[in-house]
Length: 126
Image (cartoon, rainbow, N blue to C red):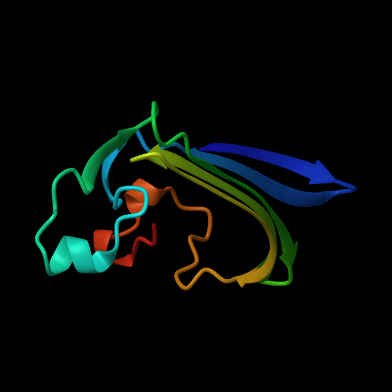
């Protein structure tokens, strides 16, 4: 995650950019043309759980947010790009989504200029 504090016309704005890339995992995927009846009733479960990594599931999710103060709270403007692809057992899957969000952010425990290390552990919000 990268965080950038700046000002736009004397208004403090906080930009955040986050990139998530899964390195490894496990995926359930039947073979091409195989039915769930064959898997669960007849017991043909060979190679339906497959290891996934960057070679057969190139996936990434990135999010860009901007926090603009409005009184004691902030308005958060966000853009989320989620690209998921997989090629397992001769089946290709592509899912692309672009999401724009508007949110309201309020700190429950105001810091009043203190460092996070000075705030008691049970009051820290991460």
